Length: 428
Image 1 (cartoon, rainbow, N blue to C red):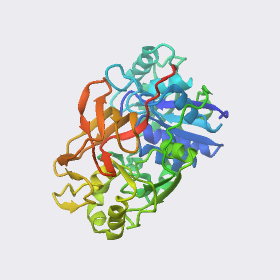
Image 2 (cartoon, helix red, strand yellow):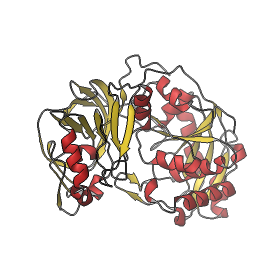
Image 3 (cartoon, one colour):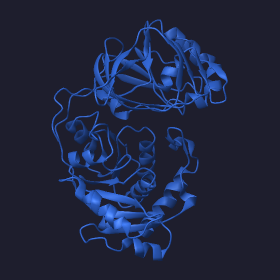
Image 4 (tube, rainbow, N blue to C red):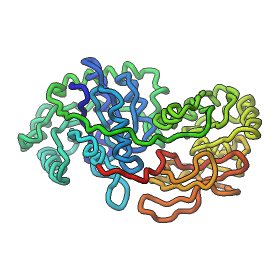
């Protein structure tokens, strides 16, 4: 592992076991030296597993929402060996042309790709898949393959057959249902919710060490860049909700706010903490629907939030937005009273997936101007009355209905803000 070098772990599609392989690699490599994980695309859950696996912060690198200089800066904040986990398939990104894919991140950073191929139900076809991915885009280096979910030594031999010398098989990981990781409707169960997490990571790392040639892993020096303009905030004191119900805050935004001089204090609505005295209260996304009864009964938190709305700005994203509404209906159909600061009612009784990148423009609220974000939730809106927070369009530029609400000093929406629009949008 050379300092300042890195590689990207990708797959032909979701569901290959790529995250488990990545976590095993991070844990195994951390036994040899300093290593850092990073996650391609919008994701709040996997990065916390990366951090647990190797003990270092994990940034999100989003090639749709961030400029190349922003991505390079986040990837090179230390000289630790970098392992980036791609999202979905290697070339999958936003419509119409796949912008924001893991392949884009690899090319921006100048690092090679290791492809994780699920060997279930195939044999010699694995080599054809690898060669097709290697030839699909000029300038992208698919430098090796890890075969996953291998059934037997005979199956491994069948899979390895016909791989060319320039796409070496770096390892073959056997199928192991005991190491499967539980998930829920927004992805994996959160790292903080696994009491056996250290044991599980060690078991996965042992599996990787036994079946992958770590010394043969390819890498390249990461392309560096001058630091871009950070996402500054004009608030001097920011209170951020942080617990299992409100865990989806991007670390790079909080770091930007700190770098701009803001003092950030965290508190837990689930623990019924009062809201700290602040200029801005930020309720991030998360899983309030799983804790709705508890949140509805936490009078210290709710009373302090309502009182703070008279003198502080309040901003909620997705789960935090639902918390600011009048009520939330959980999956069982039970209605729970929320903070009643916005004329909003949401429900999980009839779930519907809302997913995609969003171009956002705010004329008012905490973050005025043009923003890049994403939407990912299953809640349906029963009632939403008031002034909108964002004008919105999708990744293709198609106009969408206005998003969110604002009322007095309180506002929010289902969109998660990733970054400000960088008008320079420097080239990779």
